[in-house]
Length: 143
Image (cartoon, rainbow, N blue to C red; front, side):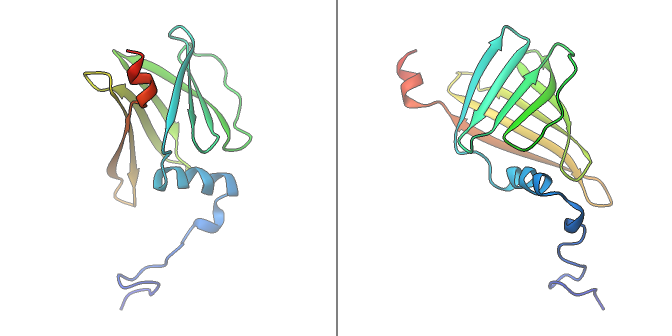
């Protein structure tokens, strides 16, 4: 007999009480991605800032500097590196596991791909989530 909590046994919500409010909000990021992103290169190949429609800013630094610890979900400094034309970060997910995040443009430059990779469950099953953002109409008209 299963442990209850749903049709498949187990315990729903197990471990969630250990998560802080900020961690819960960061976990929501996986379930409810931004509807739009604005990408700004602050310093040539050293800092890339990504703003979303949920008033969050992620500053990706590729120069190995010491980063500030996040004091909430509205601003994060993240270590990253360039892999050819892809911006890649290795981060901790809200549950404490490792994850990677990759940003890259489509071959024609009209879409931005954001790919999250992380392991879940006791078996560390690898999960990959890709979000695709279309270029805004006003930015396309400037080309």
